[in-house]
Length: 362
Image (cartoon, rainbow, N blue to C red; front, side, top):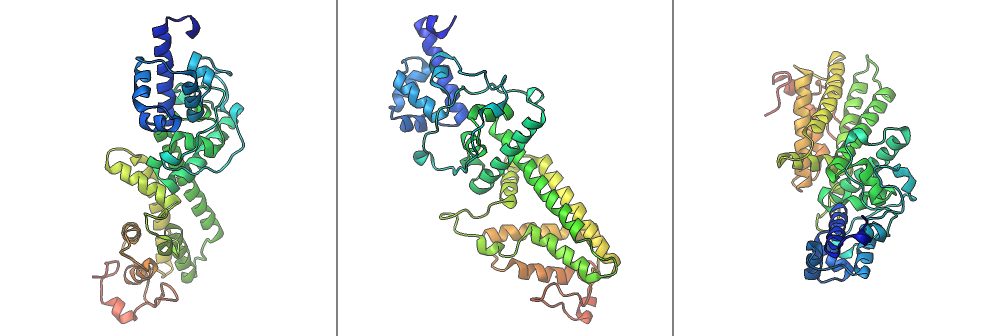
């Protein structure tokens, strides 16, 4: 029995259910949707409850707003196979940049040929090379949006637009925004791993040259906290304060604090960094560049210092983080006579020798 032959009450309820689903998948609240389509919110609420029929012009506006087809909303009919049966790449559009905006300024999206996809378990999602490339493309788009605009300001439809696919195509690969966020974290972790691997391959230090081991340590720190970092921190009311990998991982840590987020991915990222930093310090210790008791402990302390320094810089409490980094290296890691940088000279050897090796300065 099709929508056309259903009893009026059942047909009205079916339409209402599809509208509710389209709004939920596109992450519009009822109030936002009513404002966008020019419909009184009370009428929208009654229509969604089945107490009032949607008018065709209202359905058309909702279809345009949520990116589904009018045929699907009104009759449950799709112009193509549902996204769970058809490759998402069939619906690809040319990629274009997307800037999430506040709901009251967001422009309606063009209608697409199919309705929202059913949530598919990971095992039923496409596994071919083309699908993997598509998921990588989605993860890259999500990483850009989440890192610049934040998890709660980005909607699934924004990610679909950024990736150049339909909302249904996005749902074919990822069933929720949290799934996409996890993929963006994986993308970020892989980016960082690739950068560090390239660095280690290009700048493998000469075992007999202490200065090269120091240069490698400084470059690793530079990858974590780039010079000019503090200058890029701006008023949060007027501009994005921090974008890129630091931004998306800070968001994940904040979500972990309230029982969400991905603790396992954060732990994996930390473990990778600890291993690289520990190896760097151990190699430098062997040639006399660093004076340490335990490279692993020194790596942990340096990481805690750097992470805390970023947070204080974000809060506006530190203007020159790299001056503090230079002092920290001189006081806790470098062997006497090894300058942290041209701007900060190590103290005299006699002053350094007064404390226990590897002990943080008081």
